[in-house]
Image 1: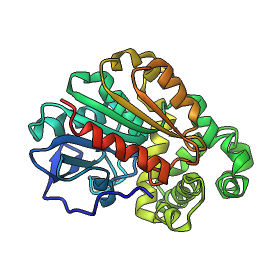
Image 2: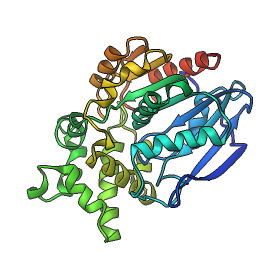
Image 3: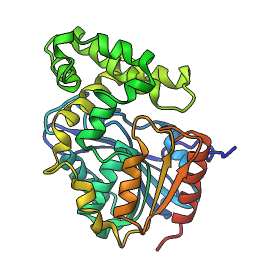
Length: 316
């Protein structure tokens, strides 16, 4: 069984203002003189957890974690204003400059892969290498697969609560229906919708479902930010100019060392997106994990990610 590095504490934390409205939680751990790496969490709206530090050898890495706008320890909580993909790309640059980092490794999974790719396409000169897992390109077909029809055929039991929360007459566009509730002025309406939305994703994230792993998705504070911010981004097509933007701009990645790790049975972010990214970016290593779903913690996925972080720690 692959093993994460031992738990460590952050040795520096910051509350970094990035606009008059938003302040980000940022932390550093590991070796201050090590290879800089930024961990880009999922969601959008998922926030960071302490175990994310454990993907990296603390003797060899300067580990930077941050909570994206509106989630985790960033403020204001669950805020949708001034919260777009391009705001987050600018935030990553603000963090890099604040920490006086010239270039860094960028590590991200799920939505974290989306944001990592967007950042690398905009600021490739600042990226030493990309380590990506569970590829999500934020195309309409991917959103419809998981939130409208597709994954529902594999998880009809988990889908039932998600579907029944919305009246029949609104079910032709489930994302829009949830968006109306998640942006309601009624706190109870928002929280009820957020919990159902969040639990649907939690129930499908692992090849072998785990009640313990799903529990976090049902917590009110986590669910409100996770569901509101996810739905906000999906309702607005990721704030991209075109549906296939990340594939169309993949040529900008060709000089960047990369590793793509993809679970064969990932239901949240099906493998087709990882496959198409690799076709557009053949220079990246591509690892298909035969016995994994979406979660980074599944053994085969974890082993491939740890192998990549060990190798990338010595990239120039």
